[in-house]
Length: 170
Image 1: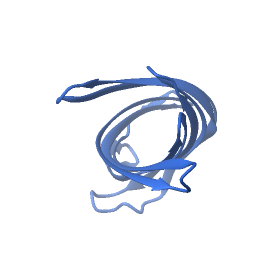
Image 2 (image 1 turned 180 degrees about the horizontal axis):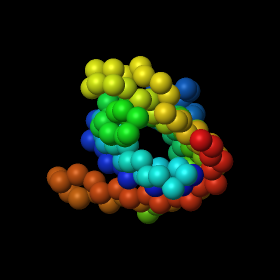
Image 3 (image 1 turned 30 degrees about the vertical axis):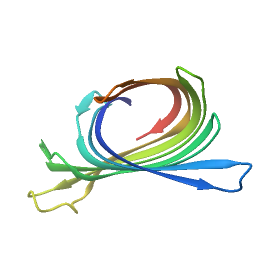
């Protein structure tokens, strides 16, 4: 199995500041995002291309230059694919735990992720509970870097790149 992922999100961040004590301020950042994710799954020389509408929830704790983030993302809708066995309905779920350090111009991070995609056959656009077509699971560690640039009165541009060693199975 091979997998490629393309994702984009519309982010609605909420920032809360919490102080554990006067000596150790901890910033708590909660984020909720609605977005689209596109995958290309190649299984036994067949290509499947699910596209998901996702909800992405995360909670970050930051102290000085260190941060930890717990992230949970799940699909709320997917495009329907046709197949000789019927229609394919997809669902996706991901959990990430990330630890990082912020330098002045960029961040470095390491983490662990686990995710699963389920595909089920249905007979009509309202039949989501058909027989199972296939499922994929993956988990493992990643390392990466990110950077952002703030444009005065315009917003921020953010980029991130990572490499992962994931174990996957169909």
